Image 1: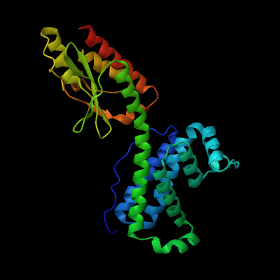
Image 2: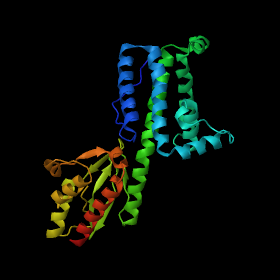
Image 3: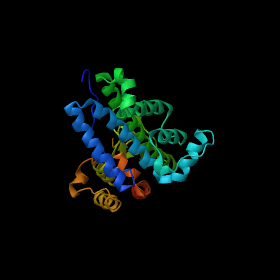
Image 4: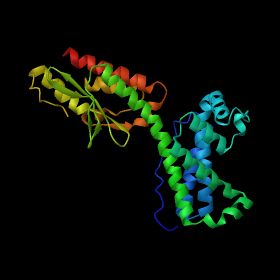
Length: 229
Length: 55
């Protein structure tokens, strides 16, 4: 493949409730990584679309009735097929309507839908000119983008919950470029940092800092500039 | 208090080893999206805040 192939990092799939779908996603993604290494271009392109389809099916199946209603609204009140018969396109449409995908992701996912059509010989004939190294890299980049978007959507709700907790309990929300989000609890002029959310979507528990400050508060109060970090 | 905090976190599924209290352990934020995890974590945070404020 020419150009820089997007990196397919290892991922967790436990946010998919259905164990069978979770297993399919994990297996397909692992296979995709192997196919990329072997430069199996057409298989990479087709499987990228398959993974997005399984991912959206897993998320939407949590509330099928809501998904069906969303697709009905999106398609001008036309009656959709039963959920089990949905292909990638209606899944994308319902996901956009439910705001699981934003407009940009919709365009990307729609592009993947077209790539996946390469599995049909007649479609491939029409699209032969675009199946090249650039196509493969584009398909992978789009897949990564959709996966990142859906993952960040989920962690966004957690961040929002913790930010609301911070304010409701009287802590001070603090963001730094180097660390991320680290709310502070000020007590008697001392600052306590209980946890940190890094820019890489990791939650850090500040055990060590907690010990130092608690000991300090027992023995001698420090000035208002004292900070546990 | 740090050991109590570790035990409370482990009760809701953090699985932190004993040596974690001397470090700054981190987990993927994704873990808190599991059912009940965020509520459980907030309960632990409430306990920490109440403990610190009572000192």
